[in-house]
Image (cartoon, rainbow, N blue to C red; front, side):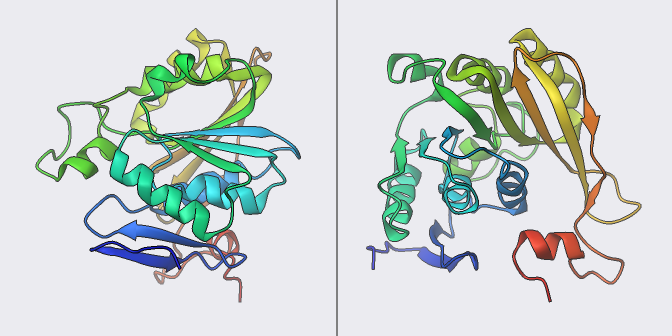
Length: 247
């Protein structure tokens, strides 16, 4: 058993025996990370994948189990979160395929070889600096706000990391969609697939999943909306399937 620090806990991911270490005072992963790992589970066998802003390592850990990727690299700027993710990787015996780097994504050109990744996954901070609630602890602030890198930085770095025809998978907020598409096309990442996530039927979408391909021809598919809850407040069948909890 890995060393568990004060205010930490081990959560069972209820998928192939996977577990993850989380700090209740920090930013714990949410449904957006689970949805992104499912959305990106089409990643091909033997792919080299990088997760920008990996946080607890949840997306990378799930993709190691959901796909037959050959190498996963996670990048996390917060040292405490990086250390926690490293222990989760070891806890799941994934050291042979999941490496994690403690640095700002904007420094990756000095660390990694560009143009060598088959796929990039990212759940970046959603909020611009100066928007939303900012009276939260420093770790949550860095996870939620574009303080160390902004949306354009994540997309620019993704384009540099990807091979020709490599894919970027991102989860974000619908109100940033215009900015996302503008930045994607600026860096030759063509939007190929978008899926809106709604809490329930009749509610406004609060998440979007986006796939973009480097140097691809224009053709965008809008997938059917994913609803999280039924009218009675229970998870929909599709969400239960994603969480591996089908009855």
